[in-house]
Amino acid sequence: MTKRTPENIARVRQMAAEGRIAKEIAAAIGVAPSCIAKWARWAGIKLPTRSQAQIIRFSDPAKRAHLSRAGRSAGRPPKSEIVPQWVPRNLHDDYVDFAELYGEEIAARRVSAMKAEAARC
Image (cartoon, rainbow, N blue to C red; front, side, top):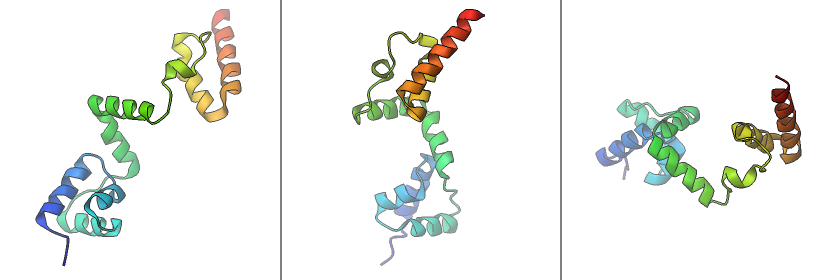
């Protein structure tokens, strides 16, 4: 018995438009990702790549806010809890980026250097 029904093809089309990749669609429908790729090819559906899926997902402000709240509820503290008080507000994003990549010590050194450089100008 095939699962390639018009309803499932419609679900693939809708989920692809929402920015879901083949693996996510396959899990939702209950088939292998290779089946989703074949169905999409058969039906003329363009499946998004991972990077295209991220762009689609984050293009909607409501979806972006939802994903942000979901990340915080998953145990990740909000930026205000990560960034020390001495870091100027305009450098918060830089601090967070450095901290994620290199650790908080390096982030603190880099941001204080940026702060000193800004004071010299």
